[in-house]
Image (tube, rainbow, N blue to C red; front, side, top):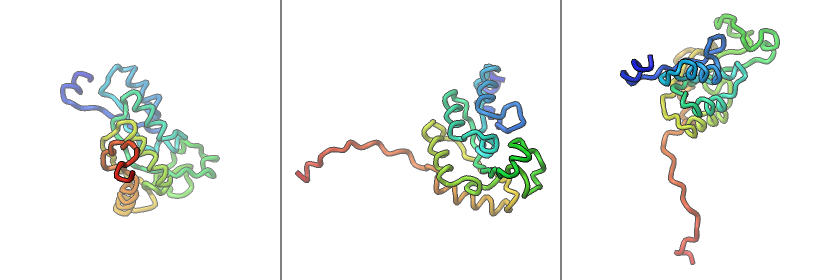
Length: 177
């Protein structure tokens, strides 16, 4: 697969999802190292990290250190501590159950604050990810159209679009001496 992917100029991003063999930064990096295939990397979806109790910012750092972050989904999750205490974080009830699950997929900004999303997009930038941010809608509380428009509006507030400015040295402006 390594040669085929290299010949075609493609990378394969495995989505880390609880219950799958690749579900965390550790298992994504282990898969890559175990196969020796640098074409294999991770698709990071913060919602999957949150409901597993993994900090998405740390996940970005771990994956970036191994040059293993290939794709990013913008999707939120809301963990309900009342139901997690009953069903656990691996609650695999039907997503058709809008209320009463241990966790629920939500539209960006409806599970975690925009500050947390700003931390994520800053971590992506700080760790060299300049790829696609793909909005994935699985919020059972709202329509796809409404979820998409709200996710876009929220991401516009926290995604860094322009390159950073060069740092400027502070000194005395001779015009004022």
